[in-house]
Length: 315
Image 1 (cartoon, rainbow, N blue to C red):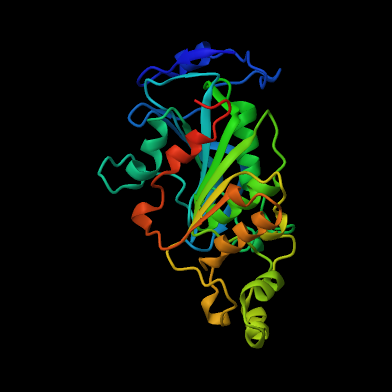
Image 2: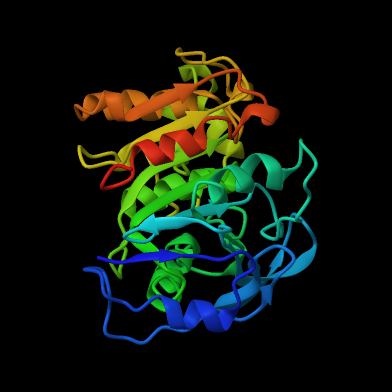
């Protein structure tokens, strides 16, 4: 067991020498401090976790397998800093500006977590449907790769504990984050303790979506316009009794009945409601919380408390 402290604007040299891998999740492989440290944000920018580059159709720009790593300031945690992994909503937006205004993404998403002693990792990634043209099988494993890369290469050197890992994300980052939490193969002692998402799609299976959400008379029309990607996966069909606790929030009311095909888009709120129904079918209904009519300004309210409540051992 280890006890340590991160000083304000800690240098890479201090970080490298302060955190010996002595806990049960330590690996024999020596770890290094990531490159790209920026003292202004106490973060590491554009750290490569892979070598793939792709043309992102939503931004019309090229993207890379890179991540940013935000460190807490002046925080002491026994047993290692917990880790939050974040997937963005669209295109190439993994790099969040240090904007201290009250309504900024940094103020609402990152600061509440780093203030509690969390390491915050935001990554660029491919999506199995949006980026299907990149090749086969569908590129649904970037988030898993990013998590395993960070835990295996930098977590211990930064004093982080992969055994207290959490996943969050919005839209495509939320949907793929849930699927990764439910089906991912994690290494280096990583345990996903809880998930928090906003506007997440919980199935990429057109047939499943049609039969689960769409009135029978509209299913043929829905299937005609739905982009079916082999191997893209489904969180709805991946729930088991061991599924991690999750909060899934949406900006509209739940329907809880079959609807016309025109109602079902990538942010269809019943994606979250049905996910929790499936949790209930596995006997773990209390592990899933669906929220409706949550606007963007409140998407992350309560997340730091929720994650802290699921730390092991509890704080």
